[in-house]
Image (cartoon, rainbow, N blue to C red; front, side, top):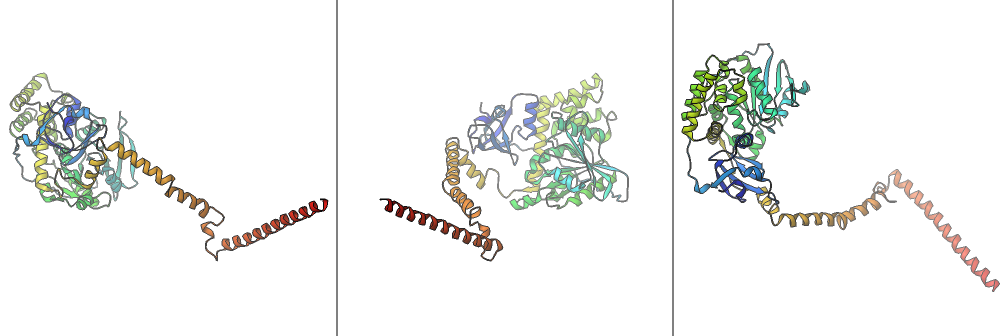
Length: 469
């Protein structure tokens, strides 16, 4: 059995199976490493750990111990699989009630390092409150929208999914499901579109009015990539606004769109990302729990039941008979798909996300192509050459700093800057330069008198010795 740990730099492999179970397996799958996905091995640390790979269009570092659970084959040996995903028509736009002065809450959600905090600061300015979420040490930040004191902006912790494994995920999920803000701004990194849209598919299932803010557009344009925002909005069935939180581009537009959706007060459309027997099983679960959960989030609860999410199911208070009936639908689907429910859901989410990005995103540099940085890294991180290169660089730095340039700079600083004729005295008409010249002249005259006195003393001593002789 070949695992990702056995892959070499430059290999393109396809995931055959994920071994193991529990939180580690779920975390690896949430990162986009699912059955059938292609992985390109970019580089390996000189000592072998970690391994940097490209998966679903973004770069990821993974420990070699984690790579052992990922069974792979060469991409050329794996048959291509096509996944047909049904698309739904775009819902009608909500009506705007800009004169509504009621207090509304807008949540900022997104992956870590997507620019969420920068956007939060841009929207709220100095009107911020920082504390902790109840019962955990996760930071809680909220503020008032500049120019709209009735709009509260809630900055949620950065997460990769709504799975209940980390404290940040639990906090975000609890807030969205139980408190249900009036609208959500989902910030996604435009340079890692496929990775970030995985969380977007989960947020849309909550039924909360959502606007997607595609951040870092300045970098996307610099890279020469292109995003069809009309197509992206059509696929996601929600408004999509290009922004750059760093430069301020589109920031006010995305806030205005979120306020508009919040005032509309309508349940957002919940696009179906699953296919075949999976969608069939989820539909049956929705029918069975109709009226037992809030209508706005029935889709999300049905998917959590399908995934056998213990924390989500425990809070519903269903009797054992209903739970057994629901589990029958899940078991039938697992048997047909020959996989566990969690793996099935994650795999089909990423299949849908890939379909969306293929239709709406065009990358200038194709996958697997090496950038200049990659080419340099392949040399300086080579297992054989890395340590000699490191030693050579350290020796060169020492040589330059001590024996050549460093020595010249030290001499110049000691003599030219802080010496008797420092740089501040080089301007001949400056007061300091004139005073220095006068003092120097007095010193030289005194030195000449001392030398003359010493010379005269020597001559007198010589004459005295001659007389005595």
